[in-house]
Image 1 (tube, rainbow, N blue to C red):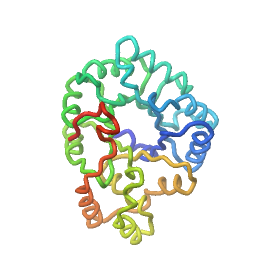
Image 2 (image 1 turned 45 degrees about the horizontal axis):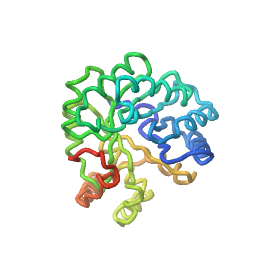
Image 3 (image 1 turned 180 degrees about the vertical axis):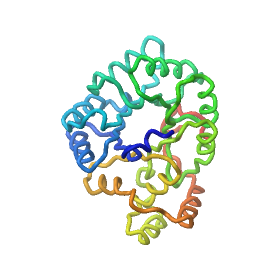
Image 4 (image 1 turned 120 degrees about the vertical axis):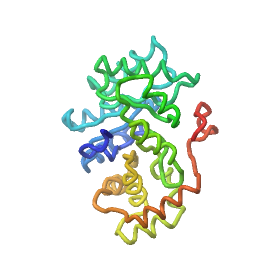
Length: 272
C-alpha cells in the first residue's frame, strides 16, 4: 500500500533547496493551503529549519506525514542511527513518518544500509522506511534483504522520462514509487502539449503534468515559494485526464530528458 495515497499525502511539499525565511514562509503557505506532507533530507541541510517551521505552523502530529532521508555518508554502523536521532532532534519529532535511504550505497552493496534502516524502524525512529534512487534490480534485491515493508522508492519521475521499467518493478516488488523533479525543473513548460491539454480541463500545464503522474499511481513532490504555484500544485484532485490525453502524454516520455545524470551526481547508479 502506498502510504502517500492516504489523506492529502499524495501531494507532498518538498523543501529543497529552501532555507531561512524563504523555507519558513513557503511551508506556512503550504500548510494553510492544505499540505500535510513535507519532505526534507540530511543532505538538504535544512532539517532544523524545517522542524522550526513545523513547530510554528502548529499542526497536530497525527495530521502530518514527515519524510527525511539519510545521507550516504552516514551509512556506517557507527553513524547511521545517531544521524537519524540527530535528524529527529532537528525536526523536533519523536519519529518520522517515512525514513528513506537517499541513495544506494556508493560502494555497491545495498544490504548493510538496508539492514540499518530496518534497525531504525525497529527502534521506533521511523513509522515507515523506504529508499530513493534505486534501480529496478535494486528494488528486487531489497525485498529479499529485509522483511520490513519498503513503502517508497523516491525517484525522478515526470512525463519527459520513461520510467516504465521502474513502474514494472514497483508492481513486481510491491515497492511503490514516489516522484521528485515532478515538472522536470520547468523543462515540461517548453513543450506546448501540456498547456494544450490543460485548456480542455481549465487547468495549467503544470497541473496536467502532476495529474498525469498521480494517474500513474505515483505521489508527487513539489516545491515553490509562490502562493499561486503552491496552490496550483495542490489543486490537482478535481479533474481526471482522459485515456486519450494520458496516451498523448505517455508518448512524451520518448524525449528522454533526465535531470539527475552522472554529470550532476557522480555517484548515481546506472539508471534503467
